[in-house]
Length: 382
Ligand SMILES: Cc1ncc(COP(=O)(O)O)c(C=O)c1O
Image: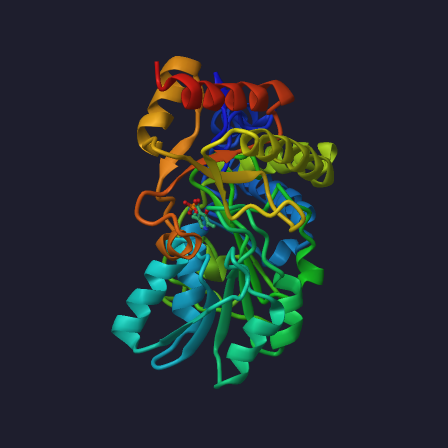
């Protein structure tokens, strides 16, 4: 089986992830922060060790590195906290629905103004100057940018944008870049960065990460028990407890910590170079086949290991099923939760086939996909 769906989630996970999760469940499965017995202490220690690993990999402060159920949860939390009644937010046309759906809800229910930057770039990637120009038009509470498109893999200039719009806070959605491209949060200039544990970080599903800059405070989306200040009916005023209501997913954190430790050893730079090389080979190979269209691809522009393409006259969904059934190649077809990005790239409503390269893919995997697509062009899906 050839797995090329790393834009959706990682397979396989990093070595050591499953073992760390099983160890947590078997040996450290008390409730972290609740009680002083050995299992509760072991759970707290495992989670704090994982927090250190994640913070080290992403260049964040462990004390401002928060665990929650996923990227979607943290994006909703930051947006709901930052965008009060009537406030203004500037964003790109390449955002995932994990951002656009909460923004549209806030538009409807809190009367916020959502400004989408119309980029001159044909692939919809805004320049920092284009973002800053929209911010300069009116008082703006927040800029929200994906670090890379989940449709095309194009990387956005988030650090330059953060410098250009300062002091307006910038929220970076790094769901497609954490683990795939080096990130030094402290140098990025962003107020907050969010990522999933189960994509480029190669950890398990059910855990996501929020990094907060030292001067950026938010309100929790959920309030509840933390094990600390149990005498009070108010949330504690210190992190991580203030933002981590309820029992943290300790097994998920332990797995994610192991994944980040593995990535730290292999290095994200090496992973990025590997994926960059393979996606370049894939783009080069597919573009030699007549009738294959690449979408949002620009060889010279920064990109992740994602490539969107279509084959003239062939339904992408049927082709993805054929690739799975006949060639054991797993990739995703259709619309990938970012309708505005598809519109911008001219692939709405049919969508694209999306190949997502990961750290364990090889030249042979890419070659097999290119040959399969060439065969379909020559002989149809037989
Ligand atoms: C760019 C982007 N943002 C956010 C998300 C949401 O991530 P999760 O489903 O892990 O919460 C995704 C997932 O596909 C994504 O690609």
